[in-house]
Length: 156
Length: 416
Ligand code: SF4
Image (cartoon, rainbow over all chains, first blue to last red; front, top):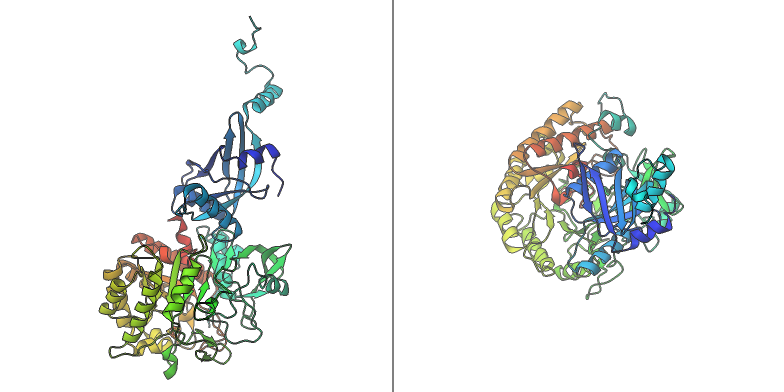
């Protein structure tokens, strides 16, 4: 497993970043949920806590680990944004990572906060989706053809 | 056994039955074929992070026994009850430890990564009476197991279930209570142990009680019921809620006895194990249960319990595979599947969950050394059981993938 880029790591570890996990339902419909607990503890994998076994998102994740399907994750803060695609590698119901995540949940939401388990995702594809980065990428690929002319006009 | 079927491998079966995930087929096979630890694994699991209790209900008195850290944890969270007891299995999977990770090997081939749950924080502590807490309760990844009475009186008349290795020396085939273990556990020791165990955040989500059978009392089983009530009340003092997630695996009781358990304690589910459904096989394999008081009584008791505990809160386990035991067992897979699906349908219709667990023919038990049915039987069995229960709106939350570790069928219900 490869080390995640530093900028992405900072984003993942920043509690004020927006974090979204996308999974696929049985019939192929995308399902998106925000995951405040999402982070990287080891700098290589993504972890997040699941509150309940029976949620749609959790069942989709179980289906993904059983049948080798990918999930996607978006992390954004301000104008910095990354998309990751990866596979669920583990569902932890005990152990030191599980303990770290339940301790964090309780620090944040009080002593009665609970989690059902912790998903570990191994990223396979990372895309920098920050507008500036995307604009440069697009320009490289398509020149100026996608720009509106008013954006290019000289200062008055 | 003389079942003429070709043995199909894990990967062949995963392709043949795509609705059963590979991890569940692997679990069934790990339980069926057994496991063996390499020296590296035995050492790694003896380290403080993993170290298990010094004895378990099934490890016997083997002086070479090394603490076993409890169930295997597959990557998807599936819990697998399997013990690496030497000289028991013909062709076990190997659990190896390389570069800080445990791995499952089959004949040297890498199968998957695996783990164990860490040593719970209450192990190594003692109760106020000086009793080691790790002799009172044992830990599964999310479940606390308590055996308040470590002796089964069916053994007194040689009427033990023929597959049973409960608190026995599996070599000498005798019960160990009073020798290696105290026979009766003091409810106050149980109360203190549970109190200590609950200090560990998020460690347990269920308490399970079981014990050997004690049919004594003016009314049969009355002493045992009284003992369970005392123990459950002691445990219940640890909780702010009236009911707490719990299961009692016990003999079949009268409706009045079941009602007492429900009314006087915080117990949330009850499980009188039928062990084997076929009438004649039940008589032969479970002669103790047949004497006290037979299969019909056992079934009636489970059905009555639904009126008390509610639909889906009464379970009955069966030892999948023992229905093939020689010389009286089934000789065809279809026969065995029909029998178990009939049972599952009957129980499900009546609100009872009929759950399978894989038979281990421990050497030293009455059926020691016999051959289990092929893996494909177990795969077909678990998918059939789940489908039947689904049709009746039943699932096995009390005995699911994280609470027990014995039931491939309840593991499959994670997508329900
Ligand atoms: S009831 Fe049967 S399986 Fe249970 S301890 Fe007694 S003999 Fe063993």
